[in-house]
Length: 185
Image (cartoon, rainbow, N blue to C red; front, side, top):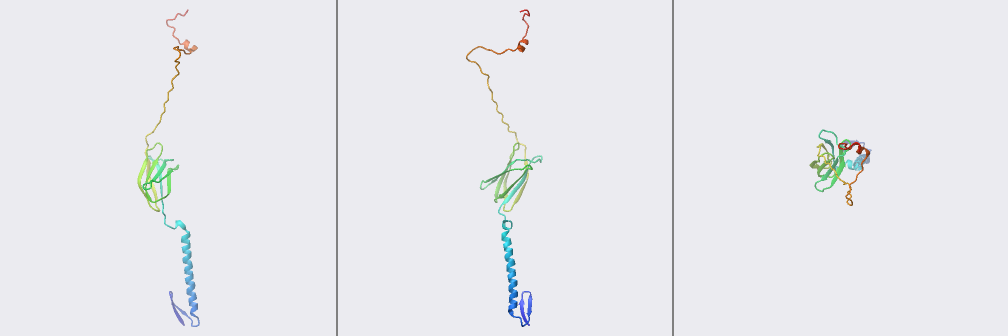
């Protein structure tokens, strides 16, 4: 008997079997391990960004008024404090807004809507992979800005003649006072 040490223990080979048989068995095991490892690496690399670290973040929220009613069509503006870059969106019919692919930075948020005061939040920190939600966007009823335009036109005055004239209708004559008038005249 020929005895060979392996990782699984000792392998006893008959004396007639050459060492080559043992070597072929180990080589096949090693090749299978290498193929499995390469396949795992290929799958990991092919997965792309979903398997790798996130480099951006996102911000969501729902715009409401002070009673809790949803505010649709609100203008939502996010300003990067350092670069001054501005991202804007409009809240949906359900008051929801979403901003994706935000670079890691500090941001200021401003929400405006007609009939409401401005809503501001400063110092929002976005880190890679963050998915932040702002829960407390409650718009207060604002002052109503009303614009009124008044224009006046004057009646034309005839400056060429001192004469005053106007049209008297039959109805105007009926309403004339008869006091002091002689009915027989």
